[in-house]
Length: 416
Image 1 (tube, rainbow, N blue to C red):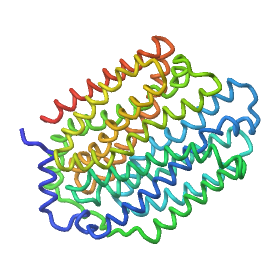
Image 2: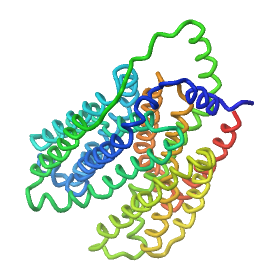
Image 3: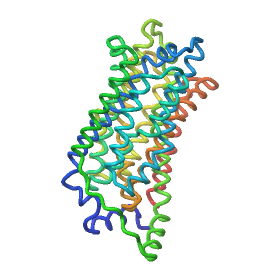
Image 4: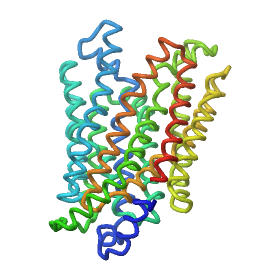
């Protein structure tokens, strides 16, 4: 059976001045700006992790269990809102252009991040964090732009570079959040985050270039042909979206219990938070080292091969994490897992772009972002429940089995 993804790629390659062709001279500079913007927004979103419970306490929550509960709600609600709105912003990007969505996200995030520093109570904090997810999503908008502008033969590498910027932001954010409150206060830290995103907004406004033309209305015959192509590519697209969810699910499933798990390895309580931070960061560090390389490998060998190979490799690396006897072994294994996971999202983004008609690419890449955030939200929830009711080591076995099942599903979907 013909591969619809390859067929669509071939048609677009010969269709003349499509969106990628028109922006061929802009995409590298846009990639540099978008990578910096993704870095700054992710730093600003993740830097509150070390001091979020302290800020919640400042806002009048005194009971320890309520501080933990509200901190989790305030942190997670941003990603929930982004998951809901990513397809909408992707659809608007298809209608009005990719750059306006980047500007909207950067300016909106700069304003909302500064307003978080002015919150008077916990409800305002949660509402503003929710608003940050609704109006923000710079990294998602950047994925739509770069995923559609980069040439097909460089898309994996470009999305890998963009992913590295976001990963470094997630890595640096908690470090910044551990230092700045001592220098300028907690509220001042939010203002600094807003200022940082403002720089990204200005760079986006003045440096990002885009030649966007609103798609012409299609005839009935074109609509019928498009419907046939969409039906033929539906199974691969579903497989890719499920895989994107499972990537974040596997990476986040152990996060709620990792500190407790490390405590069972004999780490003194006084060093527990520091060691847990190192172990968590090792996964992001591993991903930074290999994201662009594996993206380039997807360009050379084929994205399906990289996806299936990375899923199997990640499933294998997951199993020995259940048998570690010291924290540094766990850190090494988490780092290796980060290296294998890093190739998945760029390769998935490349295939989703190739499997989608130009006038729908933003919408589908928006769905891809929603799938990722769904995994980021459900991973900690399900992983925490498994850890509590079955045992913490079971989390690694279940996650490994899910990844292997995903690899088998993708292997089957590839033939469709």
